[in-house]
Image (tube, rainbow, N blue to C red; front, side, top):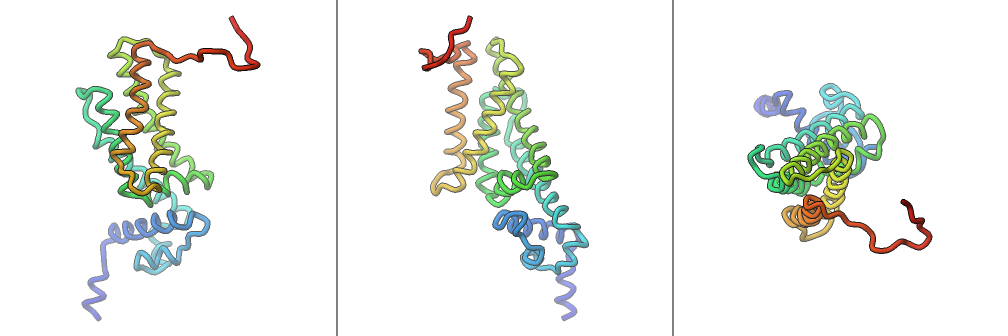
Length: 222
């Protein structure tokens, strides 16, 4: 018994990681409201009082889950992207591939970030919004670099709008890919890259789309 008790005395950092791992799994499966601290403790192999002692309340635990998973996703994207010497399109491809790969390899993490945290209001939605802002900023920077290399004048507002659209598409596509059997991360990333870069390519050639005819009831201006 003494040997078994000794084997269970893990460092606090290891215990906390086990608890957060269990919590991510539980929150992804049941949602924030329905998730049980009893189940989290059982999945982690610890007592419920120890969960409260180490990680605080359920709200604090959920916040810790969001922060850890958001940090891991951002780190994965950052690690996948090359330096400034790599062309913007290659960096965007690498970032998209890293993004979709992380979502596919960590489905519970992605459910917590993309679905559970956003539907619970503050402070959880704000935590995810900060992660999203970082990704949008990264994509906007690449679009701006590409425009500069092509000597194309594009407003900051247009750059921000394109970045928001691309990130929103990536989020939706990652969820769809995870829920659709047989769709690999690379396939999903390639689908979005082809869709996005084809349009951006035309924009970089100063070719903007416009409707060929007026819609019924629309007014002519100018």
